[in-house]
Image (cartoon, one colour):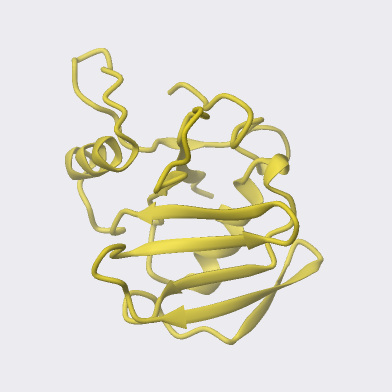
Length: 154
C-alpha cells in the first residue's frame, strides 16, 4: 500500500497562504482523502470539513466516515487565486490549505510545484528541490508537524 505523499510547511512567525502540499496517487477522493487525513499531525485536531475543487475530483458524497468521525465534503468551483487546493477545517483549531499536485505529475514537476507553493528550496543530494515523498510515522501519521512544530526533513 503506497504511503501518503504529503509535505507540510515549516512553522514561521508569519501566516502562510499554503500550509502544505499533497500529491495524491489518483483523483478518487473516497480513496485518497482518508489516507491523507490519517497522515496529518495530531496538533491539527479532528478535521470535520474538507473543501475541494468540484471539477478536479471524482464524484463523492456530501460526507464520509473517516477514523470514527464524520467528515463533511464541500465541492466548490476552483478559485482563480487558489487552483487545485484542499481546505481542511478543524473546529476550534483552525483552517489549513493544502496545494494539490496533480496525480499524473512527474517527480520533477512535483518538486517544482512544491518549491513554489512552500517557498522552500532545500536542495537534495543532487541540488534539486524535492517533491513530497511518501512518508508515514507511527500510526500512519507524518509526524509531529504543523503549526507550532517543525516540518519533517526528507
